Image 1 (cartoon, rainbow, N blue to C red):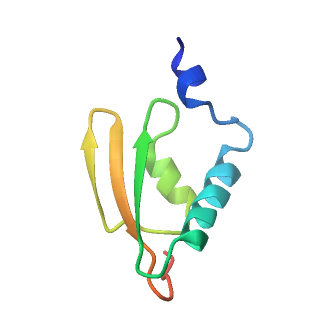
Image 2 (tube, rainbow, N blue to C red):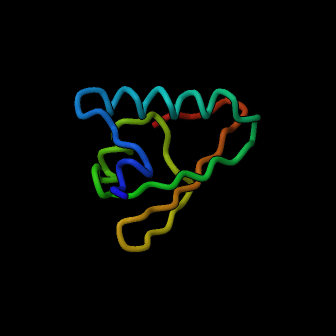
Length: 81
């Protein structure tokens, strides 16, 4: 089974907007002072490109091989970058 069938594949023409809107929706539904754990694998797109696309900064993160784990928090009034 190919990875793209197991995990999905981002559209090369709209991935930035898809990620930005998806992350925005996650933060919208997250309770105030809630924690969001975000897992990203750099097989298709580098993490730096994701972080440049979204309007939020992680509190901290960890990396193993190509997989990154990042922790975000929704403050009462979220401060974007």
